[in-house]
Image (cartoon, rainbow, N blue to C red):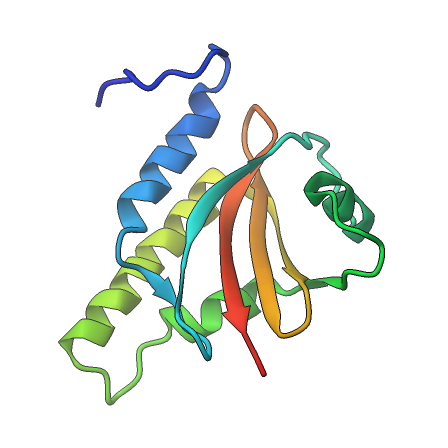
Length: 146
């Protein structure tokens, strides 16, 4: 691996390492809902060891007060995508294996993990965790529920 895409800061190696590893698993991986949506990596400047609050998420994303934000259990994020069903064919089994690898990466590289849902029917979902250095990183996707 080369680091030709170095950012202006030299202290982002831990952050880049998580996002680089996660980005290897994300191509063609869609989170299922009424509309299957891509997953992307995100970083967050909040470094405190305490869990994040809804207010901090709203501030970080610069959301107006009327936008609904709630925290949800991390297991609810993973359950629909890491559980293999009896009727799965090869494509579904391969997708489940990719999600299981992504879950393992998140659990290994990120501590104090939290999942936030933002919005009502087209819901942005952020899974954020604390890195050893440089704040939080994680995943972002969208869930469509009508």
